Image (tube, rainbow, N blue to C red):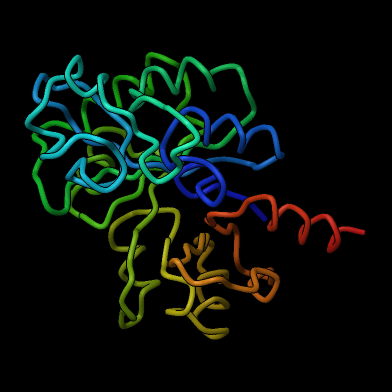
Length: 240
């Protein structure tokens, strides 16, 4: 089972920062999940919200600022003891390129349309030779189809928080390898059918405090959590 750190080691460090990614590597996570937007000058940056207000000391939309302007922000607003910058996708790839580590890139284009963001992400993945270590996910499922049209061999995960009807058929129709549902939106029957169809399920979790151990079960391929340290301990105990 994959232990994937949600926005890096978000539970204890500033989310979607290089510090959070480095700490996820240090504690032995299998990979990280993070969110990508485009700046005013069309650079790929890692930040969750469309707006800067929640996680940084700047205000406004990511898309309205150049990379140079965004680099003046402190991205550690929720963790005042730290001072971290908004990272670029390129900076992250420079850090991870030589590591055996999974990267789940969520394309954040459900609210704001970023033309050609899929192409830009793909070209950078290709430049760093990381195609085999990437999952692209999005709540914008048209974006996943565009990724598959660029390269059908890029693994994609269908992000969803609702209870879809026959979700395995939906994911197969999109040509994706993974389903990324909110943890409580799937049951044992759905998990079993996904396994029969050879489609992986990587669960993501809301802000509530969960007993991750109850989700370590056959048919679940990964857990995307704020606390990869806890998941790692659970998986180690299970393997003993």
